[in-house]
Image 1 (tube, rainbow, N blue to C red):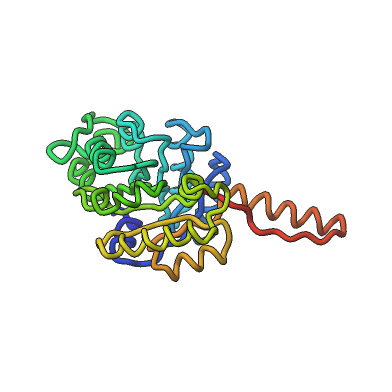
Image 2 (cartoon, rainbow, N blue to C red):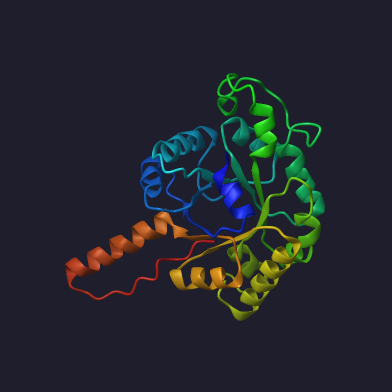
Length: 263
């Protein structure tokens, strides 16, 4: 059972973080911290299919029930197929702009007659051919999240989110702020207003909506706005922030650490 999917569909708040180090050791440790989900980034981190399986195994080995949410490099049928055959249970597809993009992702993620995913019987996801319920589970347990990263995508929110097979939506504040002329500043009032609009429309549609915040204050604001799943920073930002804090303490210097920004 994909517990992450069940939780967000029921409206239960899920807190996670981004995995930017590409390290299976760090991923295993983060799986023991208490996060509800971990985003395995393949868009901005050089993590290929084999790396993803290694990190996935490390996360699941922690025994905490956390499984990775794969953020793919692009809305590409080959990347989607490889991630799913490799054992991914939850996918996040970036830069979905309209219903046509959404249909492309759904077609690639589901077997016929629901989609057009290519079939192979023996791979990691099917327990190497030893899971007789694999095809049914591939339909029922897949969590497919589509990312909205521009004002145009948010304008098309209902057309994207209402497509059968789409589990939820995710607002990308980094690219959204860039597209709105406020690059690097997702806290800008205009960007925040657009984010608020997106989550309100998503909730009206009855779809779970996620986002990432670079610090606890922003994450708390997103919770108050009604986001169902929210990521706090990343493993890399937390590592760097703690290292700076410790180094400053040793050198006897005061330092203010925000936790960094992750988009």
